[in-house]
Amino acid sequence: MLQAVVNAFKIPDLRRKILFTLAMLVIFRFIASIPVPGVDRDELRDYVLNNQLLGMLNAFSGSGLAYFSIAALGVYPYITASIIMQLMTPIIPRLTELSNEGQGGRNKINQYTHWLTVPLALLQGYGQATLFSQTSGPNGPLLRNFGLFDGDTFLNTLAILLSMTAGTMVLVWIGELITENGIGNGISVIIFGGIVASLPGSIGQLLTGGSTGQNTMGTIFFLLIGLITIVGIVLVNEGQRRIPVHHAKRVRSGRVYGGNTTHIPLKVNSAGMIPLIFAVSIMVFPGLIAQFLATSNRDWVQNFAGDLSRWLSPNTIQYQVIYFLMVVGFTYFYTMVIFQQQKIPENLQRQGAFIPGVRPGRNTALYLQGVLTRITLIGALFLGIVAILPYIASTLTGVQTLLLSATSLLIVVGVAIDTMRQLEAQLMMRNYEGFIR
Image 1: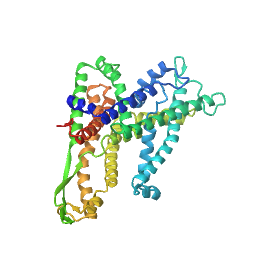
Image 2: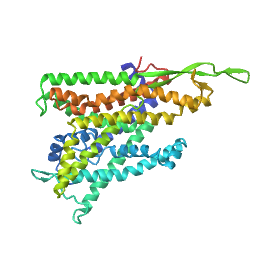
Image 3: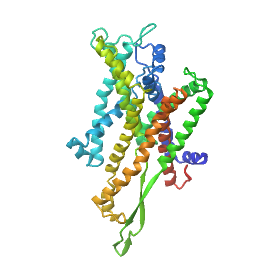
Image 4: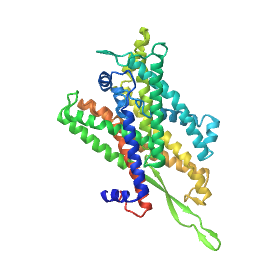
């Protein structure tokens, strides 16, 4: 592997891609350290780190939420907008037509996604800022001089919301630059960078016992779960079902083409870590809404917020069940979306290829969908079980540090594998030996 890395840096354009990606991650870390005005950073940091829900969001924003930086929202408003657009595409005829128009249509849908990201970022930023402005510490509110409908604080509030929205859009722009000019999927790499940035603190808390009073056995159990999770992610991501495809012989200009046999690799987990990101993005909203409503002056609203917060707390069984079902559902959903976009049956028929024993066209599509549905069950259940495995382990051992590590580990390992595959492909095209032997 070390020799492969050396070979990668010997290639000028590949070296440029790697250095560009690293430079964009450094810029992301600088942006994540720029705070919005009027924040008591020390008290806000303690409040966020002692709150499970906000601690999860803080990890994905690269500790941006703990200091309430302009990157506190991360790229999650964009991910939420992407989920909404993907759900609306089969329903709205105009979006369906655009999705069938090739790259131009997809670019238009991506443009709509960017537009939708702006109001979502403003809304999410306003909710978080309102929560912090109404939460008091020893020295007063965590966020001072905030009030959108107050004449004295309107400009300061507007500056905060615009700064946070601009931070999100800059991160989305950086992610797209990485996708175009770097290595890996840019948005995933940004999330990867945020999680990795928070790992040193989490590891230090784990090794020192943190505030949970965990013992040595709990730490060892944590490491074992991490190792098992990594091995499982690699095995499931590498697993695939190969569908044989036969290409018919064709004679052109006196030459015979085709007649060979290839295969279609249907992956056990075609969705990668995207279902985890989707599920986490959806699951954090009820908690944020509950914390926002808890500051209301009406008793029944406060009671409703308290019940909602307790019922959907990350350390409850119902939260884990919903989380599991959402991961499984999003895995199937995203897998089928990818399958429809690839248009494999149409491409096979256009190339004069067919699956032995299956008629071309609709029968081929139904056959491939059936196979994909069966093998995706393994990947979906695996992702769901791994997502809630830390909760099960924490219930048995009492180590609360495990509540975040599975989702983080899935994303980190998934992004690392995807990035490594892109480097592998680049090296193989240049006749170098890659990472995978």
